[in-house]
Length: 74
Length: 274
Image (cartoon, rainbow over all chains, first blue to last red):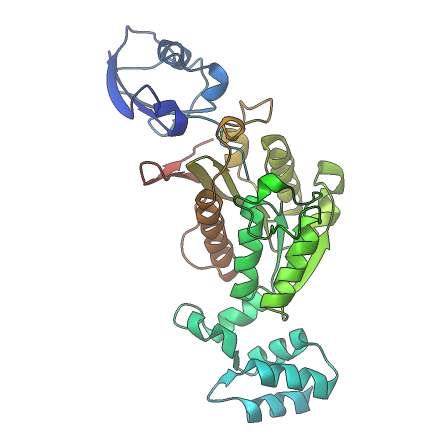
């Protein structure tokens, strides 16, 4: 299945801004995060098709997954 | 006060009240410049300092802003700009909350920090600055570290609270206290080239969703630091949100997150469905 992955802020460094990636059925958000070598604590917010999901959420063909790092300074 | 109104109407040029007349009226009538400002606005007169606001904000809007109280939690990178802009905007009462003193590493971005002011409490510098730029604004300096226990008293009387904190753990406590008190919260945070803004109204849980997985309370700012421009941008967006919420105008970033990327110059808004 194909998943559009969008990365934000620092997660783009040495990776990409947006890419369409191929995964096997049953792949979870956590699997994609691991595949991209993003430390789990840096994947603070994950949206699938603009809806907030847990890392354990399973992806389906055509989903758009957006991953954001935590931004907490002031 | 009836006399004061007549006096102000007689001194006004068209409907503008010059600062020197505002000051003189306070002295002549034994009242504060804040009281003169309210009387002027009630009489439909605009203190002349706000004349460049008027195509955007009416005299009635200025009166509404003058009668508003905004709590700013954190007086560092974001908070300094926020207090400056709220005071220039004419919000009548500000509560500035921060426990810290200025240190050398604040000088790259914190508007109220100066070489001479190193070691001084941030809220004290904020008070002095507001007195210099708009003496009609009352600023209450609260040198205290915000937490769940003191939050209710620190925020009491606020119509809107602004999140200018520097850590995620305290932000979530602030969101809880605002929800309990029924006060809208305008969140902003920054790290390096990046920032985000959320307006959260009572009953919404956007911030809890965004930060739900940040148990250690630390974001990427610990690696990136913060340059001068990012707090200025995010603080200004927060003040625009505050102004809209106080006046009931426009569309705040509610139930959503505005994501700012100054490196690629992208502003993107995401709905956050909890």
